Every structure is written in structure tokens, then in C-alpha cells.
Amino acid sequence: MLNSPDFNKISIFIKASHELKNPIHGIKGIANYLYNNWTNIDDNTKKTCVANICEAAKMLQNLSDRLLSLVSVSDEVTYIYDKANIVEIAQSAIDTINLFVVGKNPVNVFLECQEQEVYANLDSFWIGQVLFNLIDNALKHSEAKNIKIKIDSDKQNLVISVIDDGIGIPKEELDSIFAPFKQSSITKTASKGSGLGLSICTEVVEAHNGRISAENNKEGGASMIFTLSKNLS
Image (cartoon, rainbow, N blue to C red; front, side, top):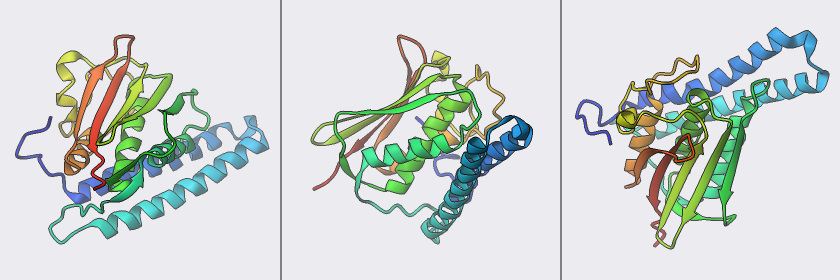
């Protein structure tokens, strides 16, 4: 877990910059794919790409508006807790990720949950960003072919896992990757991330009185796991 007093709170401006980069990179990636492959792709694929660019631009606008509305005078995020369906939030994060993978090597991102509705008292926007960042992190850095979002719950708690079948994380780095500006030393992709995604996830989860951790899977790959209290009383 992150305990350094210098990094216990990440500025809202840094958070906003990081979160806004996701749809910007998505738009750039789809546009580059169209530019480099225009003569080799069919009209339906072109239309899909343009539609995804439009959807990503809409996401960028909504994200910008939402981030600005959440800033408090103390330069900290103002969380808005309400009863929300975590299954719906997770599926929305998956749908958003899928906007940005047109033309790339196929990665199977899917949801596993025994129920269609699992409610908890949380900030749906920021928990959605946590899930998006965890999935995006696995896509960019793990070389995974499959990424599963698994939701387990009982009467009081939620356990949400983002499980990939990629290259895993060195054992000695399982805690340090949650610190700002840290990435796994065995990342093999060309992605040049800021190293802030997991630290932002940590701060959001801890604001919900939850915990986040990482572990390697016995069968290969890694899991990012965070727990939340339903707190519906």
C-alpha cells in the first residue's frame, strides 16, 4: 500500500490530466489506424472507427465536465456516494475499453458475476474510472489475451478482481507498483504510461474505506483486487 506522506494525496489536476489522457489516446489510436490502413479496410470498418471516434469524443467531453464539477476549493476530489449497481459500472468500463481496440490484436475482455444487479453505496464515476484504469493497465502492460472482471459479493462486502493471463508482476514489485510514477520492470509493451493509474486507483478505493492489492495467478498472469463495503444501511 502507498504510505509515503509526499504522495498520500494526488492533486485533482494530476488526476484530471491522467483520466483525460485515456479518451485522447483512444481517439488518436483509432485515427492513426484509419490513416495507416484506409485503402485496406472496408467501408463498414471505417464507419465503425468513425463512430467510435465520435463516442470517444463524447466521453472526453463528459469526463472533462464531470472532473471539473468534482473539484473542491481544497484541490481534492469531492466524492458523491449513492446506491449504484457495480455490475452496470463494470460493463460500462468494458464497453468503453472496447471502443479503443479497433484494428489491434484481439483481447477478450469479459465480465463474470452470478448476479445482474449488485448494489453498493459508492461514487459510480470514480469506481468506474478505477475499473477502466485496471483494465487499461492490463491491456497496455501485461500482453494479456484474456482479461476477466470478476465480481463477488456477500451481504456486506464486494470483492472486484481484474484478472489477466499475461506476463505477471515480479514478486518484489507487487506492493511498489501502487506508488506514483511506478511501473513493472518487466513491462514489454511500447506504452509510455505516466505510472499514475494504480496510485489513483489506490486513492479512490481508500476513499471508499476499501483496500486494493495485486497478486500473481498460479496459472500465469496477475490479478488486481479491490474490496469495498456495500454500506447500504
